[in-house]
Image (cartoon, rainbow, N blue to C red):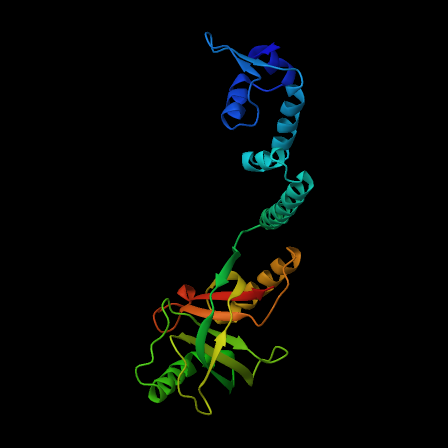
Length: 263
């Protein structure tokens, strides 16, 4: 029989590790001296030690190794582990791609993040306006019309309001815009005000600070980012107006979030 030190050398497991595996019931000494408490191992237990070491190197948990030793099919457990590692690899690949994308930029003007937008009920209105900036004057009128139809209707908390552009191509004038604002419940509709429920959505998010006539740069950045990092666009981009003409004197302080739905 082998003393624990000898067994440690042959198994390439530290004495501390052997004591841990003993405590977990994976590798119990073949004998323990009642007087000295010395632990002794049989040579056949080197094979068990090798299996434990190999499984741990594959990132199997103690519980998974215990299940294998209890008779569960090792291939089933390894297959599950392979799926988990594959998902982790995808996540790591995305992170590396994002880091490389940032490192390649001469100036990190924009920072893209991934967000989960929960399912919401919105009231919305579709309108054709002479130009994009006219939406800022039109939004208060839409809200007033909705409240006239639905006195007491409350907006969702936290607030969520955004615009979508419905034309199939860019237009300098005569643009079709849909304004959406999240509310707590459905309400009365008319020809102007409608309600719908938007399902939970994963989006790429980017913030643009400054005038709206420069926001095209932010759109170009987020679309390039999505393409280079393997994201599939899954819906219309959403413009969320955080700061603007209603609360900031300088256009340099206007803040707009662009949300790009992704699959």
